[in-house]
Length: 273
Image (cartoon, rainbow, N blue to C red; front, top):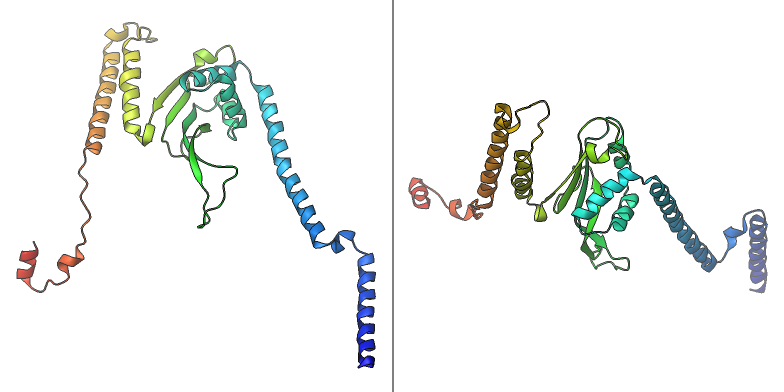
């Protein structure tokens, strides 16, 4: 037994020596204790989170430096239409990942429209814990964000800017070249929001318009009258469609199988009918 023990000890010693030689030529981090490795992972994880945050901060300050009279015009209109201060709107805009759409809107022959949604968006609490089913506890919070209008559901208020020409938008012409408007589609009722916007804002504005460009007669011109009549008719059709949708009859789903399961002959069908 003693002999076997010595031989076993020699084997262990030899393998330990070989392992020590292998470790000597490698990085010391390969032989750190498990607790040191965990600490290093935590540090690296913290640094990896810090880098995007620092980059986002730099990006925000670069965008803030680009703010000029054109941006100030948009910010002031948004602040007037939405219950937010100009400082809040500015912070939201420079933090938005679609900030470049504003520059594309200002460019010559640029985007024809610039849209903002202001509506409830599900947010996750910073200290939220996972539910038993793996989901998180989200809550709705009002948020203003730039959008193309085709990727997010529209459930709140839309603020829009429209270009009137292909001219480059400058600080001196932004108030003449850009129109601003809003319509409310709370709870996703888009038809009602559009109907209100057209009937209560656009049509009264058109009917009070005195300057119709090359049309010298203004409202007395037959083409202008025909145009206003078409807009009125469109709003009336829109209103009727909305009311028909709201007053629609919803039929309760019926389990047909219990009625047709035992039908055997024509008299059964008559009875079922």
